[in-house]
Image (cartoon, rainbow, N blue to C red; front, side):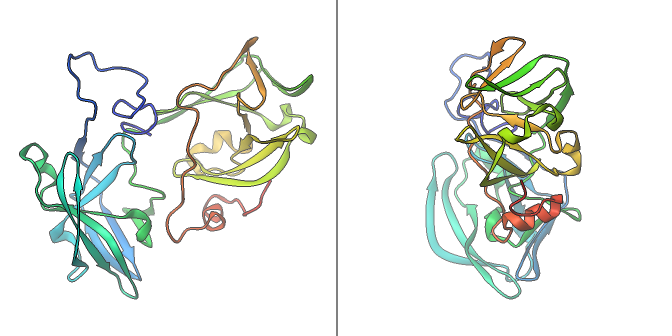
Length: 293
């Protein structure tokens, strides 16, 4: 997503290219986040900072690094565990002490940084899922540090979209919505009134997106997880609420008569929720109950 994930500019399969000679295979980028952030563990605020730095690394979600002086007293307990980062050098790991529990190897620091990575000096990153919750101001941020370069645009269209399973028309519309998301190929959403309801068989699969919410999946003509819907997405994504999107490699999807293929950036790895956030709990945040269809 954004800069470093999927088809982002420094992702592993970028959609574009840098117009410079001899571009390194891996590019890391860091910048001041300029947002107040805090993390909680075991009923204790272990860090709160206005000076976090966000690191973008190819193929990884963005990571927030906090100044050591902004951690609560005794929250970071050094361990003997050491690893080596290919670009950032030796990495020391910490146990993070919360109020009622601790997180083993819950934080790390690059302790032998090259000069060009000095922006991370004196800063510690937290293992996001090891924390109970992470906030920007008073809003909980789910999944990973929010990517300021991640963007979602939803546009109305009058293009003719048809979905078929064999000879049967599963959906047909001239009022689809298209969702353009940073680092991903476009996704087309169909109003539920334009979908043959009996063709959608709910499956057990549900996935979580930090930006959209809970997705519920459907089988079509025996093909598992051929379509999905955000039944009650986060407020910012209300336009696609209860619309249905279809996997073009599992059913036939045509747009203005041209069959869609699975594009690079559409084969998405499902995102896990926070350590203590079940799918059901995340659903409660979006108004979706676990098992909703």
